Length: 234
Ligand code: OAD
Image 1: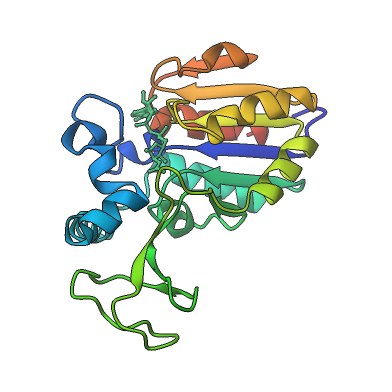
Image 2 (image 1 turned 45 degrees about the horizontal axis):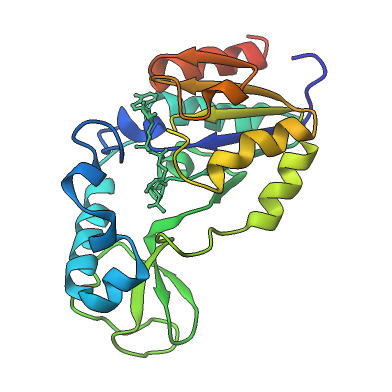
């Protein structure tokens, strides 16, 4: 693709929808089944830790039964083949991008398969449950592990690296996100200000759709492989 060297790709729940993982804001989505204030804030965890731990234990178990879809696989193919700079910033806490093989990846909202020790600050890979208050594998403290997931009111991860990449980007592509949650929803404007071209691939126009130079609407499983083929000139 001419004139493009640095690519930043933002992904959201729509990229994992065809793998069978519920999105948040679609009909029947997670935030229709659960109140954000009950399960996804530090206050909720302080008030009712069992409810919050059980919710994330169920989600952690569920994602391990899912598989990457054609969109994850196409992005991993692009990551492996693209000779310039590339960064996939995902809001998703599942591990489907990396299971598909993506390497240049940042989880801005954390990862289901990590437990975070609030005593020693270590992150440990965690595939089981936290409800029984297991000891931290790093420091041995009991009852101090929480899901390594960014809750509302908490700071997303690795923002400096992400803004630096956005400022160098020639192309910014947003895939499968409603554009409802900041700071990720503001990335398109940041990239535009640096002169990047911007493209949205989503089932429907996102809340920030008007900020994009171009948009294609449909399923990520169809749109993303076709777009990757174009970028790689195949
Ligand atoms: P949302 O559920 O808000 O939006 C998902 C978007 O994907 C919607 O615009 C859908 O139209 C679109 N979509 C659904 N199925 C699709 C498909 N098969 N192909 C393409 N697009 C599809 O999810 P996010 O935007 O990821 O944060 O949500 C952002 C953040 O809000 C999440 O990371 C999470 C949530 O609260 C935290 O928990 C901190």
